[in-house]
Length: 183
Image (cartoon, helix red, strand yellow):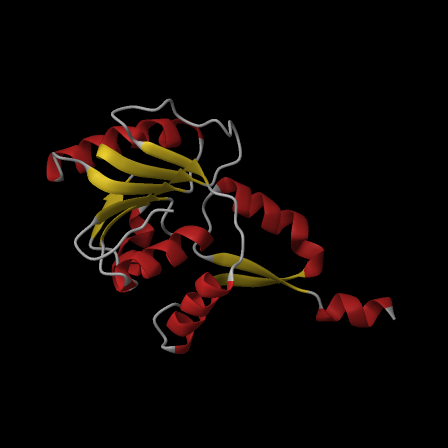
């Protein structure tokens, strides 16, 4: 899909979230130069997990920041943020670069420009991908980050927090108490 490897540059928007934090680690482990967008509270976290460059989307225009540092554009963008971010991120991609987004609104995505290859990602587990991910986990090179574990009764709050886009990594719902009380 993105076919990122050593010597290539990838921009990951929403990089501190659950999907973004995995993407940063995987891209870094593949030898890519990783540019991440996140609020300032997540910059150190992202650098620790492999981001080479972090842009604060609250204080900088990420498109201008990428274009100023990478005037020829990046090889690929993985955007976990929809709306305007998805549409604007295409401006950072080099000719014949690649764009993948995981936001579900407007599945058609941005209009094609400059031969950019765009893809809506539909996850399919296959043995090769799962084995590669397992190898990274076993080697300690890919780690999930859990911001907080909440009781099942807080599922609504968890969903609201996830929808806000302000969660670092993942929120986990603990169901054991709910199972025991249901008996």
